Length: 273
Ligand code: ARG
Image 1 (cartoon, protein in one colour):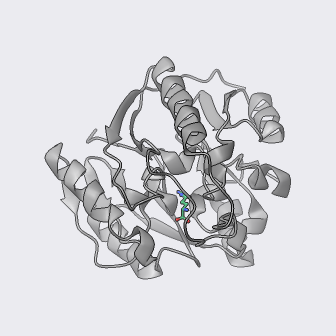
Image 2: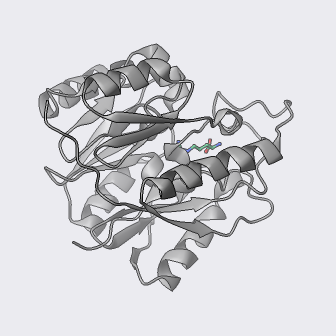
Image 3: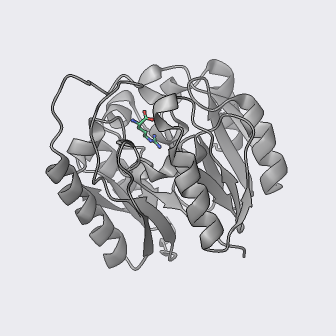
């Protein structure tokens, strides 16, 4: 087992100031249940503090009223090598979030590629730096035409993976990139063909089970050494530790009620090399 060396990252998050569950667009959301917004904010603050303590740079997007899901900043865009492919949300309730992200990226000097196809940013796109591959989910949110559009905008090959279990409606609920070459995923979230693709491309992947995935153990963020993940995902934390990673559990139970956890709250900003 080789020693893991952390690499500094740059992240974009959005405080859950207006967080609520007012509609249900994934099976985790129950619009009739009360959400504790103050608790969501304090859990989110712990997440931000954890990322900063690990040495990462955290920028924030201003939360907007009427956009209760804006805390899930991963969905707003997907960046690789200084280029940002913008999002176009599937459901009308979230569509206005895209403009807020676009404005932020343009104001901070990123090269912004506007989308014409439906895609939910880093929720459905992941980047594997070693082979320079983009992994992309479809089946619930992102349109496969968005995969082709991303390949063109980012000049990277995109591997399309079909999601088949609606509890794992975004790629980032079922698969995570641990370092330049290594991914972890829950096979049951993918179609048979996509499982075979993943086995072929990543024979050394860490395989998660259903319990890990349901605890949002794959909705994690790694700096090649530390893996920040939902504290309910104790089994996943053990598997990561056995592979030489250092799991860093954070309680995001309130944000799980919107159907998201650590990764959903974080957009990674990948500047030009
Ligand atoms: N309520 C949000 C939705 O259903 C949750 C988004 C979670 N984000 C993620 N990257 N998986 O759209």
